[in-house]
Length: 285
Image 1: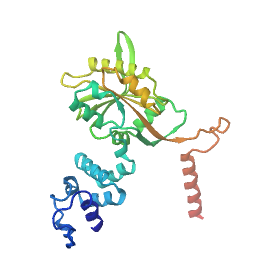
Image 2 (image 1 turned 120 degrees about the horizontal axis):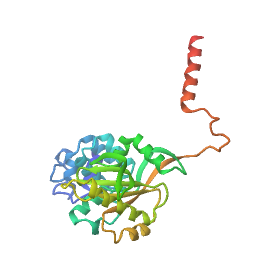
Image 3 (image 1 turned 180 degrees about the horizontal axis):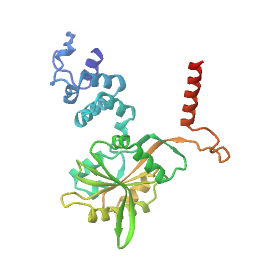
Image 4 (image 1 turned 135 degrees about the horizontal axis):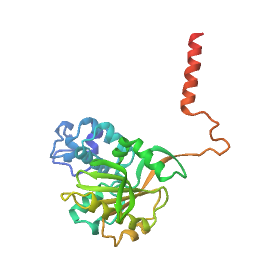
């Protein structure tokens, strides 16, 4: 309780009678909505304890408190986002939203984009292919949606589009309930290349013509790459008319076995079965 008092009493000017002129500080119970930031006063006590234990910066604590209210985070979800450093990642993707969208919509769209996206729930080889990344994300779709953030609804993978008689396929398609737009995601396991912005522009035009309902707003593209140069991404998006963002992602990397050893080591399932067999033998004896 003392830490709670000190954290927020020092975050803004103290009211009359609180620690001034050598007066006895008011009890913590007297710190009401007129003294506390509104978001801090509205979240549960357990959330406040988490903020105090895990964060030293008052601005960051207040940011997470506001996000917890806005998104209805439980205490465990709040801890997850703090540990994954969401504050430093939120809204950090390179985008052209400022010029491609009206200001009010631009701010909201930028706020839902992150950089980098944390896909550490995946374990991929250093030279993993796009399809391997795609399948891994869909196999962990719940964790994928949590990392994307509130409002994303999964529509499908490898969405088939026919343009002038030719077949094209979108890696992943989402719909954002707050933005009221389709979100087209293009996955790349290498660095960002300028030509990928043009390809995304093509996808967005096709989605808007073939899938978008008249009540939907224009679609947004998100190119997810292993690495990217901020300058190259900014140049590639500068004069693009459609709204596109470029962001990085992180995963857990696993080393590939040399070819001569592949297939010679037991799988995790085989190890588990062997341990169970040995345990059964020990118990029976």
